[in-house]
Length: 212
Image 1 (cartoon, one colour):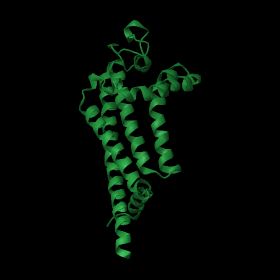
Image 2: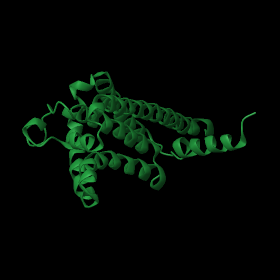
Image 3: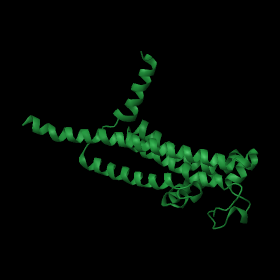
Image 4: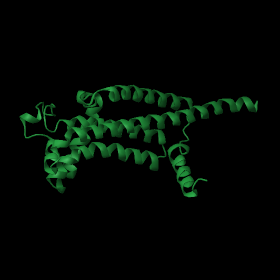
């Protein structure tokens, strides 16, 4: 027999992740479906690409992530040199997490939260090649130069300060795998919400017919 506490947690999770979504209307369903299909296409490209290709870092979405990365440096600068370097990554990862919580708790929009979770995973894929480059310093940075041509870059400094520079490839692959998992979970979550939405649309179409 299942533990009552476990059943309570599962019911609460189902409510927040699925049942709070009450969006209806065919137009909304079509828009959501288009968004989900775009994310599915991007997911296939990002997930199947080798880490070393830096596909996420060279995509249009990198330009979306970049302002939050740079803002993160400024935001965490008062907390010391280490946090200033780490702040770039924190800034670009925390922004979609904040959006996720806002969609889920404030606006009660689980589909928006699923998209934000996908964005979080994409940001991890964006960061992974940066970590992987900590020793080689071959990636071209914002100013058009590589880390070799400057004083390194964020993750070279972060891992050097921690004494973990030799683990750059392992950490990069771990972050990359975490990003892939979040992306796949987000797609399944969004797909489940689309299925529930389609059922609501069918029910609303059938209702007038049953009343006539």
